[in-house]
Length: 422
Ligand SMILES: O=C(O)C1=C[C@@H](OP(=O)(O)O)[C@@H](O)[C@H](O)C1
Ligand SMILES: C=C(OP(=O)(O)O)C(=O)O
Image 1 (cartoon, rainbow, N blue to C red):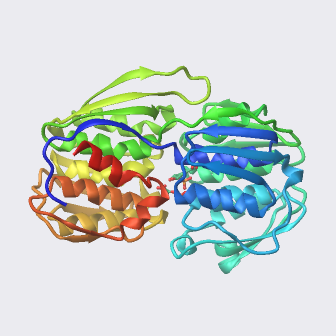
Image 2: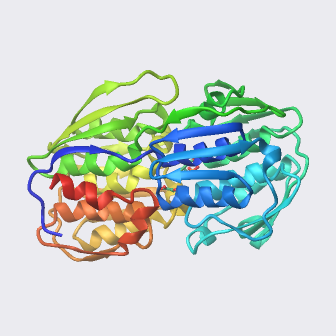
């Protein structure tokens, strides 16, 4: 990978991964046929499609168009085999909530990375609702078995800032007797709440509190998934880091619960502007023009963290090129992602010459460091793979990047898009 000159051009980033998962899930439990445009055909969302097909839902896919023929929650059928979520935490955690209230047994597995990720954060509230969940270490790890049963509404305070846990409880709450209320410690992505409304359901939200009544029916809808700001983030970084760059990113999702990366870029002195924003009917979106700029270090912590949790690997790279120190704190959640993203980011970037110290809940990065070259690997983590590919653009010499197939989880066209602006 040769060091890049200015990156110039336009990229339509692929559909949002979180919204694409939910499109399949809500389409599957709604009554009628839902049509979705700009669906992300990445491996994670394809795992969700395959799980719902196994539960008897007819789903037609054609590139980025998808039609889901839902027959209501009661239309889901027992799968005699095992549901495989692949590498996708969102798939398994949200499905646990959904399957807890069905009248049948389900078994869930995933890959080596999923085998290390904690499921008890979802099992605990679901058990309070009456769910019967089993797994290794008392339901902490896969394989997970769920014996569907009648659920009751609960009031639950989330101990971690997690949209996956919140969404699992909401999917169970939709089927439970009575009301379910949730309070969050910090605002997390609200795509589930928005989608329940889009499918004709009722949900009340006020600050960090959410309430949903059980026994609601959902109905089909048609919509377009906005581009994924978490995928756009790699090109926002590439444009900011490579001198002479000017990249227009088209149709990027701008939901406030996801735009923490823009707040950080602004604090670091990046040069970007939002060209057009669609109305906030379902999910807001717009185009972003980013140009090269010199950057300065910053501090990231508190409520900002859940709004950029998946962007922290690429933010760490930005920080290596910023003047002064960047401190990332309150991000211990990074340790339970596809990899331990605190140690993996630090290990791989240090191989290229970066100065990073890890802490229990984050990193301290010293800039500005000229990155040299080396052999690095994604460790099977798509976001680490893309971050390292962007790092390769600013290294003195070519780098060797291994395990790039992992990138197909969220951005199968990543290298094609990168090639188009070089
Ligand atoms: O709900 C979602 O779609 C997601 C929530 C986040 O995980 P947590 O809920 O574990 O924070 C995020 O990291 C993940 O990529 C997608
Ligand atoms: C953490 C991620 O996804 P998931 O939890 O769905 O595996 C991610 O996409 O960065």
